[in-house]
Structures are given as structure tokens and as C-alpha cells.
Image 1 (cartoon, helix red, strand yellow):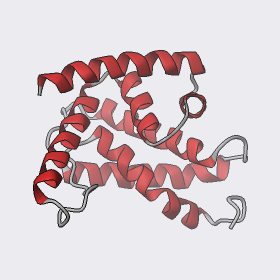
Image 2 (cartoon, rainbow, N blue to C red):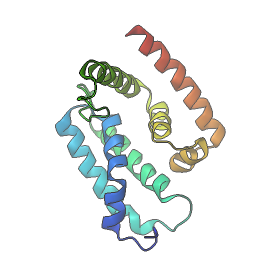
Image 3 (spheres, rainbow, N blue to C red):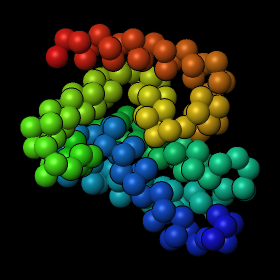
Image 4 (cartoon, one colour):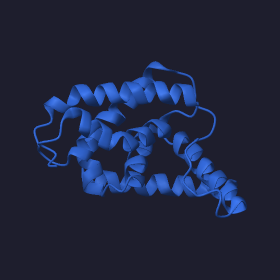
Length: 164
């Protein structure tokens, strides 16, 4: 099915995992994260009719999601705390490795949440597999600015991860 032929429901469903990861990169507590995910879903739903087919739909959806998450942070002064609940590794294969990988992932996500917003956005999108050009399109930034922010964010993340 072509993106142009897909219904808003189908497009939203297809991009829901991306939206969930965006919400998780901004909010740690499960209940608040679920609320933010619902808010992001509504924002994307409302924004889909404005997409003109220019550029990547995925980048457009990511931009809407990040903008909504930033708006939520601006209105909510509480700092996020807690751990990411999603499972990325199979715990049955090697429970010890699963626990170590989970802790490392949680540490990284916590470090990403500590980044200034501009850095957090480029890192989150980069982790989603977006190129610097796509990140720039999603956030309205020049590709060089994205590369610079990503480089600085990675340096800071390395420092924080080495402290663990």
C-alpha cells in the first residue's frame, strides 16, 4: 500500500512504535509516558491531513511527535525518572546478558534524557535510523547543525556512560 493510499489510521498504526520510542525518550514514568504517547498520537492524527507528500512521511511524523513532546515538557516542569520498560533482547536466551543489556539501555536512555533538548532531539532521531539530512528535515535544521549537535551529544553521552 502506498503512503498516499493509506488511511490516517493505517499510517498512525504503522508509525506507532516510533511514536512510543519518542515518548520514552522524553518521559520515564510509565503512566506519564502513556499519556504523552496518547498526546503525540492525537497530534500526529491531526497533522496527517496537512502532509503534502513532500519529503519523508516518517520524518514528518517524527517532527510532529518531537514537537508535541517538547511542548509537553515545557508545560510539565517535573523531571522524568524511572526506567524504560520495553524489552529489546530475548530474556530466555541469556538472562544475565539480558539484564546487563537492559541496564545499559536504561543507563543510555537516562543519559539521553539529561541532554539539552536540541541534542536530545537529534540523538533520538539518529537512534531511530534517520540520516542527518532527514533529522534536519524533521527538525527544521541545516544538516551541518545536526552533525554538530550529534557530535557534541555523543561526546557528552560517552562521558556520562563512562561514569556508570
